[in-house]
Length: 185
Ligand SMILES: [Fe+2]
Image (cartoon, rainbow, N blue to C red):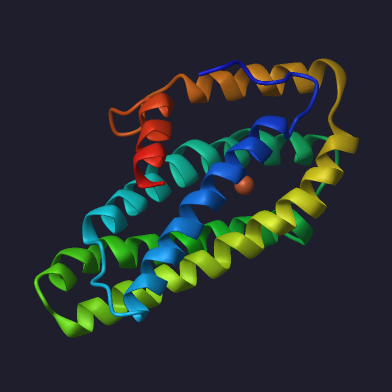
């Protein structure tokens, strides 16, 4: 893991977005292959679920919710309305989709059609949500954040990002999760 650029409050998060988008696109491709008559690659879908749960949510959304958003609140951005409220709501929606994928994949693999339908609906819902969500963060909220957090506050924020990134996510390091993404891709 390389240390992140401490001159921007969003540089590391934008970088992580690119990896999340790549995995989401890969999952989309797996679903499209199935539409073309190839069986669904459940093992890779399972890896995608783990990646979304631990990298996109625990590691990435964790930094946004626990560090960036409070940092923005500290300089006057409201939490209960506007962009932060929308982003928090969408993180929760994402969790609902990923939980639905996780709770249906085993039965789907065993041939349960209803579970298979739920799994695919949740996967498509998550892909659509995360692509739109990341676009909103990259193009709106993060541009606002870049203008609102600078200097020592920015450096503090970035060093706290590094602390989160050095932690464990259900026993896995961020490097482990990046390797998982490489396997998926
Ligand atoms: Fe994000």
